[in-house]
Image 1 (cartoon, rainbow, N blue to C red):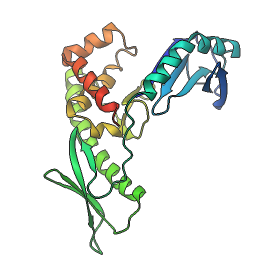
Image 2 (image 1 turned 180 degrees about the vertical axis):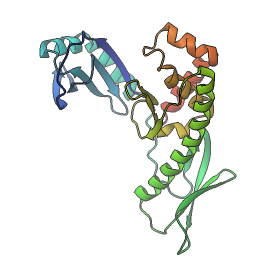
Image 3 (image 1 turned 180 degrees about the horizontal axis):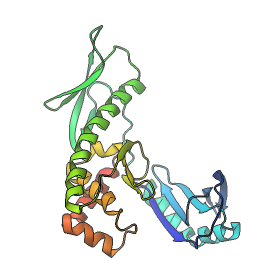
Image 4 (image 1 turned 30 degrees about the vertical axis):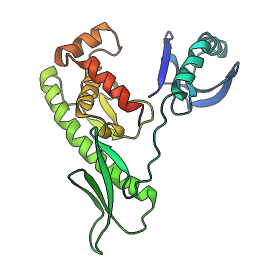
Length: 255
């Protein structure tokens, strides 16, 4: 997953304006900078798998301040790029007969089966096999989309159960959620909309990791920062959160 650092900037009133993206060169590092109206801090991230450096800054921040912020973090960016690029690269799947995929941490072998003329394409599981019931000659994109739809359905069921449980234990109102494809985060809590987005790749990690992410994002409705108070509150409901986070990072390096 992505590595990132940030720096808070004093907020001021500003009109909403379209985002603007440009490339800034910091010595030998190219940084893709996006100026945004709706953010209050400068942030820089190094994204897998190739170590692309992306930064965001409030629209009202001066160019001099942005360059200074990035220049101060040049050594950090170099180390982060090396760290990301040295990780094992995820295997590119083609979703063909005999390939292995993960479902909640357990490996399954893909089997392709042609659907009948009036049969709808679908996915089934039997033993250690996931069968894609699909038309003969279907493209890789169609096979991938079918499996992702299956992942989304299964993950939605699991997340719903965990969120309902923590809703009761945290004594909080129901929080709506969506499942989307994300490159660098497992989940995000939007305090303004009071909603959560989960990464569809959570369908591939162990259930204890999914549960960790659910509690993590739900805790953000009380504490926005990742500080001692945040993790103390998590520990009340999940004493082994550190072990689950470590396991999640291990799976994240493979996906």
